[in-house]
Image (tube, helix red, strand yellow):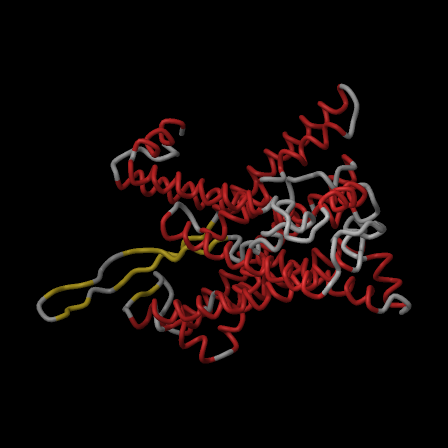
Length: 436
């Protein structure tokens, strides 16, 4: 593997792409630590320290993890890539509902470019809404629960507008940098950026586990967490690579005087066909009741929500979270993989599954295989997402435990995809890949 990395750096074109990607990531991390104008950084850091040891430490730790520490610092890139990810998910869901978007998707490159343009516009709208919400919380002293320090110097309308516009411009710049990485660098740009945000918090999270205990106990806890983390990553790699290959044969066809077809290929159906999207859906949906309880604090329903759904290590929270992940996995797989469309395309081009007749029998067979694969895939996502709660039970380290939930899925998935892209470019130049 090391020789493959050396060969990658020796190749001028690939070296240029890797260095360009690293340069963009350096700019991205720099913008994640530069505060927006009007922010009192001393008070913000003091409130962050208090929040890390308070009752809502788990929530703030999760926010810190997915924003790379930028959001709680009210940095220029505080919103990160989440507005773009949310906009992409919304457009993907609307493609199934709105016929116009579905028609654009089927048009090929031109239609995809149009949908990408809509995604950019929606990203900026979501960025304005998110920035307004977070700046309002900071100005009113509600960003950190229990901290009474002033997080901003000036609470005037002009200063607030400048902060909102700065964060929105930061989101637009992040979107542009992600597209630059996709075009001129290595890997998918947005995926690389969110990978960087999460990975940037790993060293601090691991070291805090060691510092939370004294002497040899700290090093023992650190070693145990590292060992568990490596086992979790091994399991995630295995499940992310697992797939069911359905063989497809294409009949020979005579076109003019030439004979076409007669090839054999396969349809790769992954065990985790939905990726990390169901976990994000479930997390977002569970945040809505908490938001309701903040606006209606005197309601009996709000009291139950505050008791059972605020702390992420409770029985009710994890049970509902697990059930919602399974439900969203089936839902997302159903809207992203259409057995009817796949069966029609196979029939149109003369393809068939050996032993299965074309048309309705092929559609039923694909739906049956997909449902059988989705069951273990949904259970896998649910169990991975519960790892932080399990860590809290055994290590009392939920707030610092980095190997679990959405973070490990994103890190491993993006890492595998990037390595595969580098490996494919190496193989084009007659070098050995990373895996011999």
